[in-house]
Image (cartoon, rainbow, N blue to C red):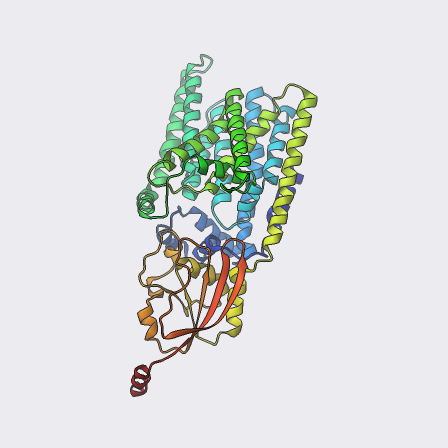
Length: 515
């Protein structure tokens, strides 16, 4: 198991500090600079719950704020996910075979599941990113493990149910996709408790205690969630009012599945046909894992079905706020379900062939992910753009960006953000793109910029971001004198321009009279 963890850690650490932070990572970096008390308030202006920001704040107090340091928290969460998957599958197979936890029947599929997660490009990508998804995946696995322990204990124990409630509450405080995981927990737990109630071998006191502890866990999750509920409803309403959300149908489902397995999705290419084949195979294996599963093995397939089912149901309406990478949580359970399913093959030699093929395929995807990350290191992005400006900028010269998104992306690399401003006609930006950490006094209009007594200024913006305008609308009395561009794998290009302020005769006379 130690070798598997080391393998997973190596893939997640590779190139960790060599890439610039992308916008969402910069937002989390900025959130980690605020006190814990202020993070709660600012998180309400984001579109995610606050727990990840709290953990990241504590992490950066110990590790620092460099790109590598802040990304290490997600690496840690990714490693914890590997360990949690191993324990979960082992717990499931121990329950199925009623055997020891050291029995080969429970250890082998658990180790195989850990290997698949350690090698998964989808898991590696988000375990290298300063976002809440790796932490959410870890809490999904560990809360499921805790639920299974609570349900399968010979005698119901209050500590098992309290542990589950704390992990479940932590999951939904990390990401709202966690509600889909908890829905599967509720369905499975309900059926499992009904079976216990029908079991004549259980005493009435044991049955009453089980019901009472399960109810206590549900109440504890609700109690812990209650302080954030109003903020959640407000975030949801603001999200639905935005223009960028759109209904998501089967093509979006196909794209999400293909991304989980490292396939590039392009509806105009032959890759779309390959993605559809992969999606059909994914559906077949998920249903097989659920139908053919024994006892607690079905929980894995149920979580995948419930997660995708609820996501598709909610995404088929007039507005959807579900992104494809949210399925990272369900992806862990799919890999666990596949591991269990592969060890159900009755023929030993055929089983070994299939396991070898799957393992070779996972290893190939692992190496491709490393090559892909290595190629991205050549794109310096915002960090190089800011370094270029800082080498030429005189003390106090203003930097303009076109919205909170670029403001947040530039801020980690500026020694001082006092001279950076958002330039736009109105403060009318998409909810959740950095507005939670950018103060309104940092907003200037073109009219107010024309009145500035500045002779030179800089602008920095990305060309490939649909949520922001393409460029910065400088007033006519500011003239573009130089331009430099920096490639970026995600944003297209980062454009840096230098502007000079051409004052009119009236402005010059007015400034002289003021002197």
